[in-house]
Length: 215
Image (cartoon, rainbow, N blue to C red; front, side):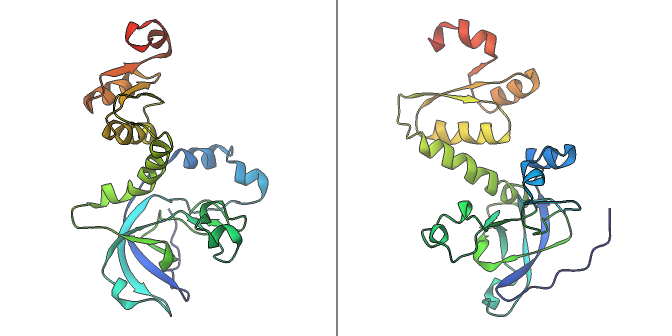
């Protein structure tokens, strides 16, 4: 734990009072030193992690609509430069000059009382979404993109490898299409949790290959 200066919103930014932050596999890679960005020069220690978050806007910088103050929000992780061809097409997540909140380019993350981010990265949360679910919107977007790319329709059969957070969210989006969803994992604990969410077709690598229902 360290005391850090309170962030000030730069022009175009807001400061958010952080309520919840998710812990991601990316953070494990930073802890172990395996994170690729450390070896590619896109990140370095010390780093404040935390890219899945929810909170309330406390203040705004110059050029930002003051109506954001007091609103419950979450925000994008990938912050493009806003000027390149990819950003202009809406693909800021693959901008070569992007920052990633708490991950890349020296942008501090949300594991602090307050976080400064561009107003353009914000997404307002409805009252029906509590802070825990708000912090799950970012990984949920990742999962939705994966499920959507599969273009599933009712009657299709899909296999999701790994019943972790992203895998389970992907399976939920896939199930919503009417597809028959199967999950494969290694830990009985994670498989049991998948069953508790209503997934009947839950397997290990061994029994997936021998089950008649997966042939």
